[in-house]
Length: 550
Image (tube, rainbow, N blue to C red; front, side, top):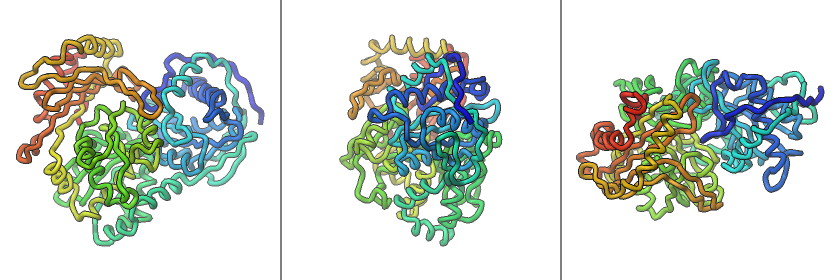
């Protein structure tokens, strides 16, 4: 074995997005593309480090969602890490670690940080997507200062330091050596399961299954399958087969691993059957997102966060109450109403879990969530799909109520926030940027303007001043807020890999219980028309409507 120095040239466009660098597999498999990015990351960590430290003598966590190229990327990263001073790598067996599990391992083992290989809910396979991100010592995604430093370094990197050692056996548990670096292949579930036992009453949950409670969890052929099987079936006693599509596949079995009613249509159909189980749920590619479904009843992510906030004290891990809650700006204001009633601080942040991380680290919040089917808490620094499923399972056990009954009671008490997200995918980047620029230019003239019976009271491009570190993040989404509390929001997504994705968010509040049963898209028709009038999405993009409406 020897450490080699190999000349290389920068690649354009290696700037991390909302959650790391995501590109098509065909981009990542270009010679030295992955190597360049990882070398840039290691250079930055060695130059700055946490609290002035470098990687010398430190431990990194490594794992991913098992998609195509995951195993190859693991071997490349190990050889780069060994050549750049890393003392130890904790590697999930088979190169597997769900995103929340990676956060749990970083925190539990007090690692320097971790490299997570995932494109989350994006499609997999040779023609699909791949992704890589760095999580800091708190277990959460790196802040913008670090990711921008990595991008800057990618434009300057001219050589790679890498071991020429043979590949290691990533499927064998235990210790191995690569150059001077120790590699410990660990059980990917163990640390995460230990955290879940601290939060939830596992004996109560076992009792539910002993009494015949039925559950269906669709892991979508992704990394959440082994975790759900180990905890729900093996430990809590749910019947074998409760977790379906449980084997992680490199192409997710052709499924689009995004847990929403469109992509998880098999689960939706199953929950509409006369013999449907009591509770249904799905997770995404890296198991950080979740969808909650009752019998013929789908729970909106914003409602899920609000209801979890309202009932948190029923969960052992939160029985002393919450310190506060946070939501991303595009997420509906349903949780705001609960927080106000409970006297809790409620923070509105940009999209991206790294913004929640600061609030969690500072002890300002206990629960947080995004509209994109992601909820989480102070137990890790990522959203967490299986945690959310255990939370909802526990609420049903503690209250004796069904999913639908819990949500309808919540609406009766707090009112319903009708809410939807429309995704316009694959738009030409120039078209998307021009649309947003034109919207920004129109903002000063919009306050006071009336659209039907609604009057605009706020029109801005959301900017966030972090209350913990004082950093400012601008241009986080264009907001139109009306005098009745309704909102129309436009935002470009940072998670796509082809063209641009425009996300349109529509929301209005309904307090009248007799009017809380309308189809969501119907209830928001007027706001959709306002959005089209303001932005001209159809004319600009040539699209008759969104690809996905959730």
